[in-house]
Image (cartoon, rainbow, N blue to C red; front, side, top):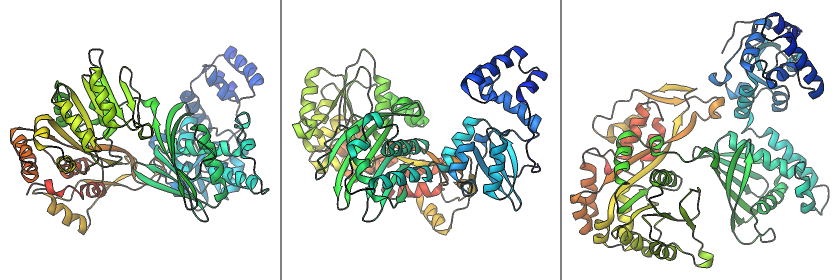
Length: 578
């Protein structure tokens, strides 16, 4: 990005007087703001905005004209991480500055306060170049800084180093004293966790992994289904981190030899995050995995999740009075989200809904949710038998793990209940195979099954850095074998990598689905337990689109990349139409 402006030191201007002269504010408002500024110590511009005398956008446009520098909508500008990170994070955050371009003799920075002469001089010293300025809204600058530095770990590492120093000052370390609740705001371990969760939230991570190794500590977070790793030399901080997390989740901090599970709720940047924690003893210490569930966003509707034809069909199917609807896919494919969206659609005062889950991920009003616990023999089968005596209209079974659970669910579906459940299989047809392998009778499946929805999550191409992509030779071969008429290699996009996507080229995920509605031919195949016939009939059913072709259609629309299509298609080739 190149802006036509010359490096020059900003002029010292009296913002208040100039705003009055240009009739942006009144003399009375200026005086009130000056009085408030003396009390609060804030800058005059911030005080005017806080008092509501002028909005930030108008103020920055005014400064842009007076200082003769560009006003940028920073959220609309892709920023190259490699360039932005040439400015140290501590400097960028202190002065609320983003570096977006470096040339031979000068550098372009975006500032929230371009009248800060000290910041201007310090930037010139740190970068060793003349400074060109642009101005942007402070919240946009801070958002960009989170995207640029959130995963780089400089702030995290500095706190970790502080904690490591504290831990190495003596052989005996009083962790209880260090993590006392009253002092938590100042304790390095608390600030370390705060930085960890804030970074994960900024990156929209779904999981955080804390993994002690022989000589290092690995902190990994899963963003859009892919793990991103940060390696730290301060391995000694791991026990302090783990103990603090155990305290938050009310786990036994003295027990380090056995796995433990728990949950706690935190508030980060005005968002309430439900954290499920699992600890596991390893050779080099306790490994911790935390699943982050953002409860502030609510549950997505079927209209938001599903493409048109499948949405229409599923909405019709979930209105049936009884039967079984299965949602299948590997771990992390969004099955629970889909089921909760369906339950939200059905959750009215006329229907009694009971869920049996392990664990309960989202809390729904009016729904009776039960979490199973093998430790007290509160199993899926036991809860289901009791649930059927509670006069439910709809039952959700978190997962059909064994024959007993499957049989109870199947029988419930033919005795007047609408049943939802999941299976960890790679395809819709694979669900039928799995149930038969468990020992579920074919006739029972034929009488109860309404539909099977298979799904995957693919990463979205980042719209800020998307570029046309020509398939390589291997991809062209794959395309040519996918299906008739699918060999054309044009129209695909791939992300180059920018500040908005953390350099990955992807931002967010979307679902890809295939839906098999059970018809008379498939019922007959189920009764005979003929899986091959069932698969052939499913593939030939009008309107059926197998997962690979559904994903390929998303790629042709520029929503995902060809690499993502190939990744999710490796285990479902048997449904492709010859």
